[in-house]
Each structure stands twice: as C-alpha cells, then as structure tokens.
Image 1: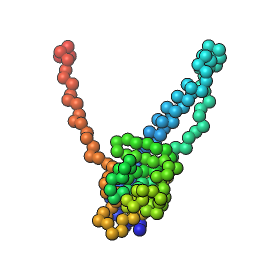
Image 2: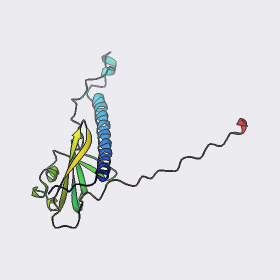
Image 3: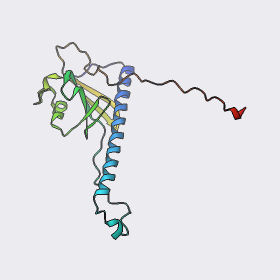
Image 4: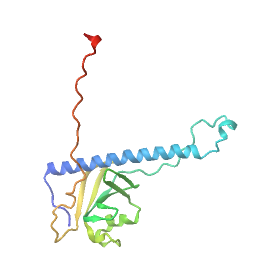
Length: 182
C-alpha cells in the first residue's frame, strides 16, 4: 500500500528532515574516506623510505575511490528490533550517530528494505513501512512510502521521528568593557 498524500507543508517538513540526515551521512562518509586514505597512505610504504627515497614525502597514489552515495531509503518497525531500534536507513556504507543507523545496501539485513515482510529475516514481521527517497544530485527531493501496516493502529510508521527539538543555548552575554577602555 502506498502512503496517502499529506499536505504540502507536512511533506516539505519530512523532506527537510530526511535531507538533513542525508547531509550528515554524506559528511560522515567523506570524513571516513579521508581518514582511510590518510591511514592507507601512511601504511602502504616502508617507513625507511623516508631516508632512502627522496620522493617519499610526495603525495601517494590514493586508494581507489569508494562509492559514496546518498541515502536511498528507510525502514520502520512497529516495535524495537534488536540492534536496529525502531528502524534504519539504507546507504552505501554503515554509519551510526545520535540514534541514527545507516545500514549498507549490501548487508543481509537490507533485504528488509527491498522485500519488506517477504524478506527472510527475523525482523521481517515487524516491518510496517519502507520509504524510498527520490534523489537529485545527492539531494533528497521527494519520497515514496510503501506501507505494510494493514490492520495496525499506526497511521504513519515514520511518525517516530528521528528529529529532536533543538537545544539552542542562549547567546553569550555582551562582553563587559575592560577597565582600560573607559
């Protein structure tokens, strides 16, 4: 069952929330790739090259470019599932932060996104919704929900939002003038 359409304001809010999570994921992946390249560059040559090879301090050949793409979807459960909480995102690589979990699309558990309740996974019966993102140049511009919650109370399986109320601290007090500035 495809989700019923929501009003434009609600839909825009959902897209903005998913877009923010996608941006965080892409930054985390870029940081991970940079760290991997730095570590690999240090480890891929003998350390005595520093003295025996005058070009040793030049940039090394980078590791083959890993595929880093945007999030492609999301899975929602009707209950807490061990190690997956209330749901997870699907992306090219695994990442976790602040209660958000991204699972690689190549991982066996990703079958819950592709097959939903038909997947051969212990958590398959808990799947209540799958969200597929419409991507434009790594940006989430829309989404399509495939709901599998017939006969259940929850209208929107993604209503357990990952967004949190922002805790914005008050601005600092104005600096008091120094004694010499009078």
